[in-house]
Length: 163
Image (cartoon, rainbow, N blue to C red; front, side):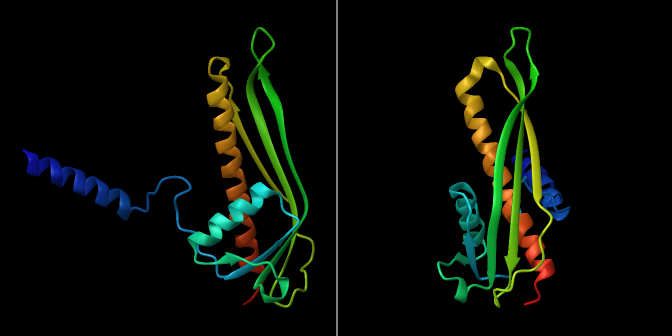
């Protein structure tokens, strides 16, 4: 009986792995740039850059001359607005909007033309009974949005800069 359970779990895990299934946000991120210089970013965005780069054996550098990629943040805005109200006038749902305008340059530090701004939108349900938990949930969602922005910047850079 125990042996059959083991094989059942083994084949389910093997089947999920074989089809490419992985948890959201847990996929590998490979960055072909080994040294990245980041200019004008918020602390939260810089932290996510550092995390993504560490996962791919790369690092942020303090000198733009030694960087393979130069990312200049031109404008960064994060907005939260109420999407719906309950019967007593409190927010039931929030929409989060993150907009990032940036420029990228290769090792030669010649900036490419203006990039299309990144816009990332998320919404979440705000249960009034769990205010502290919902604040924590919003922080997690914001972190995921920053991470998605970093990965999008690297994707654009890898497609536009020939190394």
